[in-house]
Length: 239
Figure 1 (tube, helix red, strand yellow):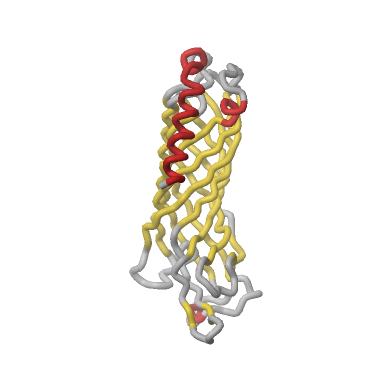
Figure 2 (figure 1 turned 120 degrees about the vertical axis):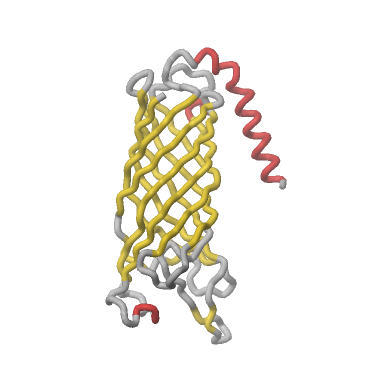
């Protein structure tokens, strides 16, 4: 509750600090109330984070991961030159091949060796975006370029195309963290280069669930897992 309250206070302070500049800046064309964007880029699985006590590996990636294409659409509502709210959709795929430095999984029996995975992702996000230039230099009219950071919450719809566990797909809560650079090329058009890490509350981004042996010799199936994937993109926006 304290974190939520402090976040609310911070956002309100940002709105108050820049509201007086919104009228002055809105005629520059570099910051507009509404923006629609299309992105294209590549995505890749990053790692699993295991929060279970006694887990031998807290951060682990069993795969040689591939880069896969992704496309996205977004609608951005700027409430001020410094703060906006973005709705984002991403369609991409995560694939990779088992790293032979790790022992083969039992699930690989009867399947190809080394094991591969193939996960289709439909991602939906609601994010708060912050124009870092306006935070550092509030009221600056030169918004031809700016650095930005975005974060919020989302939903990852995960489809296991390898069908390691038949009939089981997942819709899971995720938390995006997006950093990038925005460059305006006219009063109506701009480009953004960015990279988004998404922390997904699942052990199914790579399609498999890895077990381990605890200190008592018992086999444990982890339940408190976050898995992370990255999407690096070029986005075109128009207002």
